[in-house]
Image 1 (cartoon, rainbow, N blue to C red):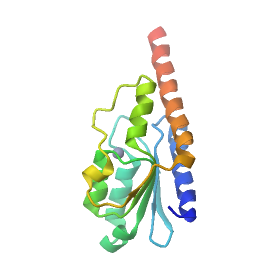
Image 2 (tube, rainbow, N blue to C red):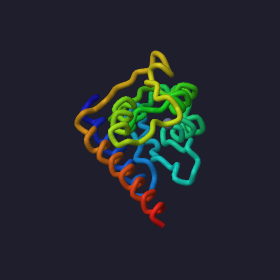
Image 3 (spheres, helix red, strand yellow):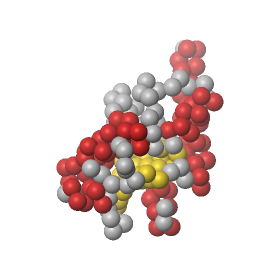
Length: 168
Ligand code: ZN
């Protein structure tokens, strides 16, 4: 990672915080061209019930609609949490380039376990097991605590909401 890449990762964490503030799981991603231009960004939008609305999936589809194969291959996706297998596959199918993530799926699973949250229904394979040969960088320890705190807040609030509804 180069120093000019850290702001993109900070933006991913901001987008994850925006998602959390809007009732979504805290994940955010930014698509950056080879020259450093931010092309697109998104954050998790699964609160409405469609659990495929991950930001990395949206960026893969955006890139397929808006970029040439050469532009996609030269682009980098920055993201607050490592791609899940669905998003890694989408990334690989559209031929996007490098991925830089703040925290790994392995870290996230460990935190969910500590919080007593059941594991997700889809196995958290590392990106490289889904897309062999892709350039992947992460985790980025400088920002990991911020991402961890967002997930802690999301699941703590969720368990409170569930407890509230049980209590009527
Ligand atoms: Zn995903």
